[in-house]
Image (cartoon, rainbow, N blue to C red; front, side, top):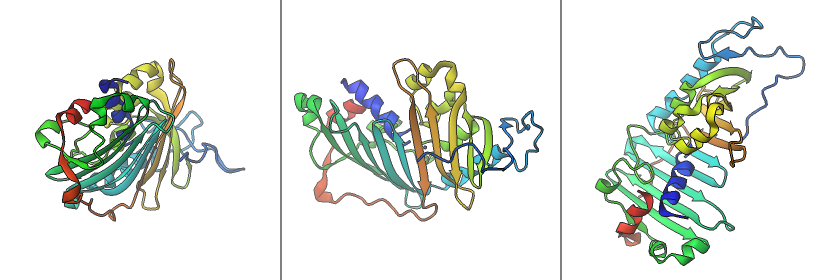
Length: 281
């Protein structure tokens, strides 16, 4: 695995889109009237069923609280997971990311902490590839590596933009909803045009390109909490080329109740070497 491939893998895992448990099925309960399918323009399906409240608007509204920057989140895709918190009041965030497993040629775990104006990352690389590359082995320090902000500015792998606090870009994703229906109290299903998901941070550009025209109608399910805030979003990516079908899942919780990230103890911190920046550029 090359350094460039490793960096791309981190983007896909940490920004999936962070960044989506499977939601309820799209069918109603026995004997219930099927929910209307709503187009992106808000019109009713050919069945003529009324569009009450507009399911798409409910989804758009569900992401507003995320912009306040006080929540916990999880992200999961094939072979990768991420979890963390964002705490805008203290200008801090923390993410734990895992890519690959025990059987992987190269597996990576990262513990990333941002506490403006500083950032740190603790990196663990395992597997046959890691064991065979001295330059990578030098990075397994077991300590938090302090990052030079000038060298990670604009880097979506190691940096964090407190003006755009959602690692998965749910607000951008929901703007791409092309069809949606309510499937029960606080649950929805439909399709999303993910061609803008690279901007959202949910999928990398290569994955979107591989989907071709399928990228315009990716199935999704969603849940909102009793206050109408997004709690779960799941994308069901169809098979594309050599890539099998896969699920991308994100969850949100503890709105307004997250706590500030904890800075690493000084005796566990070293300055990041040049090799670290090369790894993720």
